[in-house]
Image (cartoon, rainbow, N blue to C red; front, side):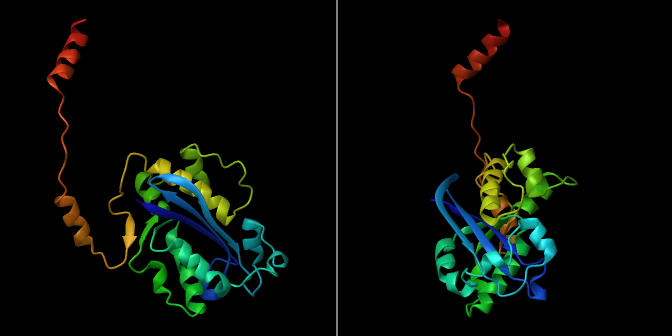
Length: 219
């Protein structure tokens, strides 16, 4: 069974190094390429003000978060939910940086987020597949015919659901995306060796299929 967690966050601002915090987490579960009803969603009190430009993006106000839990109060539930599953994130360094900051501030090891965990960055995949093109989530929704008409503002759970559908369409027919996952402590040479040692399967036509093919052109 392959379990993926598609994850998105909303924050008080763009730079975690400036003390900005997560205010919303949304996660969607994919099992064996099927989106399930098992999702994770929390609004979080950042204990600091949200920047005006960030508010214009997601529309989450300081007042609406006053009665919400702080990150340390939901961290155990969050970590249990993601378990050791692969994470699918659009622009993964942004969200991973904020998650590491929050986990560290909660007294836990921030390495639990990304060390020895497979992380698929859909922005990296899209840039490889469509170099020079716009590869925002909205652009990918348009490219892969995923309906995003309800996305007037960014929202972590909404965006995670959209990204889950985009990911399934952009990887349709693939069981892995070689070289586009980020696994800490896995060297590039390991990846090269895996490719070189892969046995390619050749499916040959049967004699009946060949005869049918030749008869078709005779007609």
